Amino acid sequence: MNEKTKKTVKYAIALSTPILVGYLFLGFAYGVLMQQQGLSILWTFLMSAFVFAGTLQYAAIPLLIGAFNPIATFILALGINARHLFYGLAIFDRYKQAKKTKPLLLFTMADEAFSVNASVHLDDSINHILFYNTVSLLSYFYWNTFTIMGHLFANSFEITIKGLGFVLPALFFTLFLTMWKVKSQRINMIIGVVVTLISFLIVPDAFFIIVSMIGIIISMGLINQKETNHE
Image 1 (cartoon, rainbow, N blue to C red):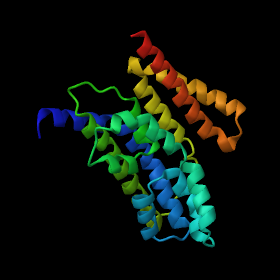
Image 2 (cartoon, helix red, strand yellow; image 1 turned 45 degrees about the vertical axis):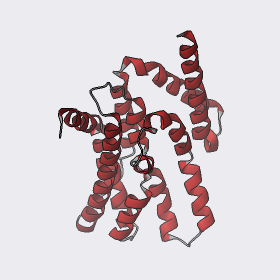
Image 3 (cartoon, one colour; image 1 turned 90 degrees about the vertical axis):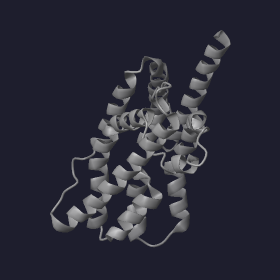
Image 4 (cartoon, rainbow, N blue to C red; image 1 turned 180 degrees about the vertical axis):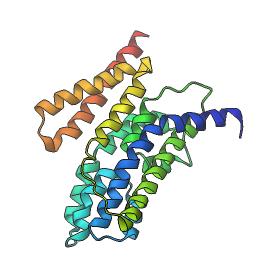
């Protein structure tokens, strides 16, 4: 392993640490909830390994224990994960150099991995594609490990998952503060906050996420176009 590879991996591990901490609680809680609903550890493993979508996995628990309804399942999955269509558009330029690993990057593009990979500023001393792959794979590993641990612990101990609602907001706030240190990214982050707040205030809940993502992409596109014309 050469120096550039070592530096890349170390940097990816460092920036993915908030994801590890967040998934420790969120993934663990998911495993506990699956066990408490009477689902076997096999289901926990299959959902985490092949679905790998935290919000959808939580929302799908009632579907797993209820009557089979493929139409409802499809609509639920589409509604919750529609934002990933916009994630793909936003990060396309960064991932386009990845060839063999592009399917892997797309499959493991969780919200948290996307936040890091889309916001980080990498210089030439870092292998960009290796960094993106490492962050994505670490996120996948963290989530799968902690969901299984949660299920196993729930089999052996009395565990409550109340009070863990703060974890996801805290995780994203930590990622936000980490990315804020990069001055070149601040304008994009401000755009994201402003557009999201406006959407939250004027758009119905059912369309809030989609409208926010469209607004952010359009706003960032206009800003980048303006900077390009200015140059």
